[in-house]
Length: 134
Image 1 (cartoon, rainbow, N blue to C red):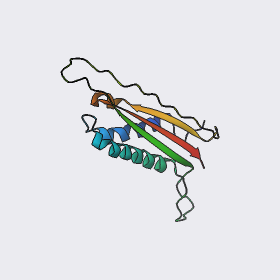
Image 2: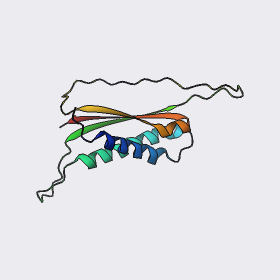
Image 3: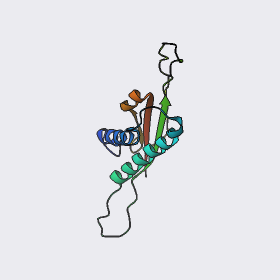
Image 4: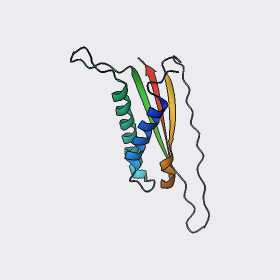
């Protein structure tokens, strides 16, 4: 599978987006999750498009089209809390996510990332990036 960027660049993009959006969050906040997801997705999309769109070298004012179409998914999951006053740790929720596709293995692909900075905030953040060659 030919990725539009090296894995290290994809990790950098996802890490930066999660850190920028959630860096000041101290805990899961249900009223903020939709906004956080939107910001993470848009930040990643902007970075992917800017890093993979060829620059115009012909002197033309036409902006070249990106060579890939992108789909970015961001999932934020709250860790369950222990019952109040129980003295017990409630543990973590289980989650499994998978994706399948029928596509051109030479140009299309998918990649997943789990942001480690989320655990100390009582949540998990998983991002996936899918690309389709144009």
